[in-house]
Structures are given as C-alpha cells and as structure tokens.
Image (cartoon, rainbow, N blue to C red; front, side, top):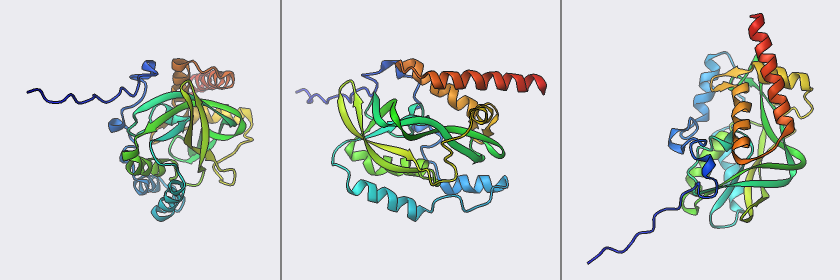
Length: 252
C-alpha cells in the first residue's frame, strides 16, 4: 500500500522568483527574536536615556486592539522599507503591491543609535500621507498570526513613530487588505518636512548598532530594481548621499 500523497507547501517566491536570495530568511533575521527591552539596555549602555521604548503592556494592547477587528484567515502585511528585505516573519506568499493615499517619505529621524545617533542622526523611510506607494505584501498564514504579529509589533512598535492601520493593497493577483505601519506625525521621530540637504547628510553619515543609513537606502534601491519599481526621488537621494559620503571620506 502507498501512503497518501502530502501536498508540498507552496513556494512563497512563486510570483517573484527574482526576490529569492534578496529577502532574509526569517530564522536568520536580527528581528526574529527581537526584544525591545534588550535594545533599550544596549542603547542605555551607550548613553541613551531610558524611557523612549513602549512598555510591553502598551504594545500588546495595541496589537490586540488591531487584531480584534481584523478579518479571519490569512493576513497580509505591506512592506515599504526594511520589511522589503528583512520582514523577520514566516510568510507563505510575497507579491508586489501598490497602495493609494500614502507615500514613502524619508521622515523617520533616528537619534537613538539604531542607524544614527543624537550627534550624527540617521534617516529611514516612513509611510506618510501622499498619492501612492509601491512596495511588497507578505502573507502570514492564519495559524501563524499570533506569533508573527507579536514579532511585528515588537519591531514596528518599539517606540512612538508608527500606528497600525488597514490598507487596500493592489497586486497583480487582486486587491488584498493589508496591515501597514503608518507614520505618526505626533511622534518626535517623524519629521515629514526635513530639508533635502539634511536628508542627504543624515543618510550619508548616520550609523548605529544595526548598520548605516546609507546601507539602508542602498538595500531599498536594490529591492526596487529587482521587482521593477521606479522611484526617481529615491534614486536622486541615493546618488546625492553617495557623493556626500565620498566627499566626507576624502576630507577625513
């Protein structure tokens, strides 16, 4: 007698094989077992005052409140920044996506020590109000929602800066309702009107315990190239930051 066939799990990169090798496997991610209190302690050892981190109770209350009204079934997550190459979650599908009413903006100012410091700030992308934003959506299986959303909240809600919302994400295979972490303009770390020269300088020089701001935008540009997202503003910003970085290196 033959054992019944067991369906093999679907390849999560079946729609975008070009991303294979460009997305960090969840088990290898720095954020997979990330603990905000440990990050707070590491930064405190570098002189960063405590108190900037959300409490575990506040973070969990936000997660529970968001999920309470979420439809049953698999859950999609919209990625527009570092989640595009390091989502840290176990996912069953990834698709290119577009959402309306928002725009990727380099408005997340880092002075804590992640990709910048108080003395030499860093800069990363936030999802702010705008016309449209292209990125990726990752699918979390229903059975994994609790564990994977816990990981997401520990990463995205470590400190004031984002709030969770539902967005309609258009993909080549239909529209899905997706979780997105949107810039909270009331947070001190969100600076939507940062002058261009400051954006360039912060990206070119910001450095912290997980890397540089320049490496951040370079990796983002790589993901765009891989899936055919054209973003002239990002390309211009990256070019200017590279030139600034090179000029600073020559003067050192």
